[in-house]
Length: 162
Image (cartoon, rainbow, N blue to C red; front, side):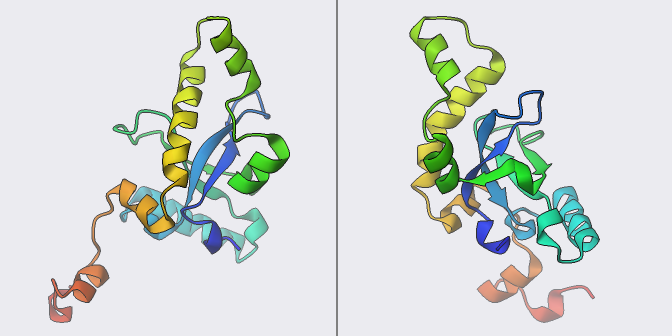
């Protein structure tokens, strides 16, 4: 169920030479973000797969990088490279910082920028897990759309351009 995955915490394989390097993500749907290029691209991909959900890539928000800069924080990932938090924690032990990073920290070795982002992500994941999906959506500062303003009573149907 693709829709049931929206706003859930999970993991995705970082697009690099290391296919086994999974990082924490939030899986997003098209309406979890304001209208714009990401939503349009999601809709294009949705149309192309023609309801074959196995081919529909996941829109992910990478937990960990500088959260003030959202450029580069989103990616479309093949579904085969995405895992639910529950599966990743139980089957792959991803609920803990990767062993190679733990070893570097324990021995006082220098961490790369990527490894520092990974440490930052693992520190933040508990905060994300403690939030309900509707609270996770608040992180993305979505612009209210016309239909939402009508439902709140802040806009009349007659005010919406056709």
